[in-house]
Amino acid sequence: MGSESSRQSLAAIIHQTGPDESFLVGTEQQLRALAHGILDQIEAARGSREVWGVSVKESGGRLTELWGDACVDGMFVTKSERDTKKLVNELRKNSGEPPIAAEGWPL
Image (cartoon, rainbow, N blue to C red; front, side):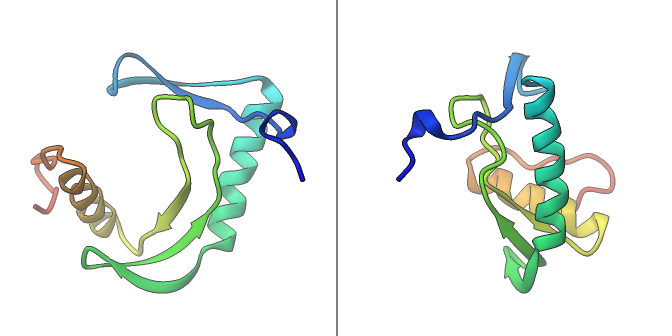
């Protein structure tokens, strides 16, 4: 029975002037834990399911603080850069943001 205050604090993602200028903020220990957590989740990604038409392996577990400007709760591991770009655009559209329309980005 741990309380929120006894939980190890995590690094945070903070926007300075907007989403295009963000920083990872934390102690050296928190940032190392984030890096290890990312690698652990890549290794733990299992299964194969479709998310908006893209085949992914998935893993979960909070990596960053809830109070930051973005909270990382898990990851989707795609098979190709094209799949990554397709999924990014689908996630953007799902959250009400316009898709990235740059060259090489599937709409």
